[in-house]
Image (cartoon, rainbow, N blue to C red; front, side, top):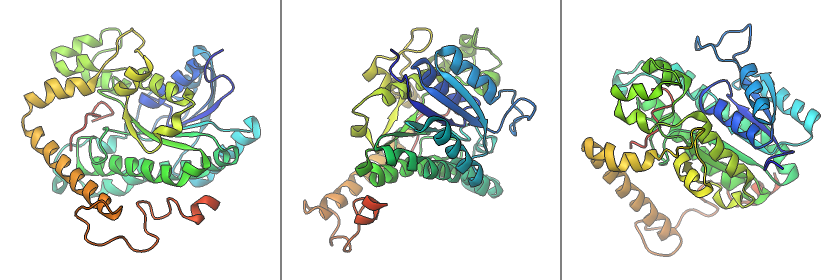
Length: 356
């Protein structure tokens, strides 16, 4: 029996990239997967790309699951509400939600300092990468809370809490917000036995990235002549298999609130890419990228110092001494509602390397 046989998943943003790879991997594991997005046959992608959700659903079914394509604009709450109603009506349950909406939004492709970026991209970028994710999770959790089980995965960029997406500050802000959202979700949903986890790919060999390098999956190694780091890339199926393994783990609640990398999960669960390789972008980044780009080290050192100061403040609030001179105000907590009675009752994706 496949590990996710009988389970129901939604992959929001399943048209291409890590979303498509995750849908396919959940299908390999036997799940029924609702593949959502805006790109359908007869209705071209807003990104001017050829991929469609119907193709993704076919890949899911071919892999051994059941793929169901549903056109949804996840920035439109009424459409998300109808999606959840349909899943409840047809399946009676929802076990996994993967938020992958707008992972390769062209709005995020610009590189440069924040004062050089067109500020008009900020609002649509935040709506696509943050608000749509909040809307989707908000309507999915009712099905999970009722069953006292479930997993929400934020497909994000970088395995550090701040930054990691690269490119420009708008991109970094959006990805950092996604990872903060994971922590806040975890605190609110912990008592309901619903887990929330962030997962990042390494150098993702998506359809868009292959096109960028002028290669196909059949000859992708040829792109190593342009960028040797590309030889350490992973397919979207790799991160998808990592997420599928996480979804099948009965102890997944112990990981709630974490932001985890595909290569870390691959080591833990014994996952490989479709060709038997186990790409490890984290090790490559440590051993090759940082030594070759010494300016990155200073950013990491400042990031570590920032985390140590924050940890010291938190320890101070717990009575262990630290930078915080006074305890927090009555009723305050890291998420404000985390343990309150109220909460108990009620460049495209390849630039995933952590760069603070």
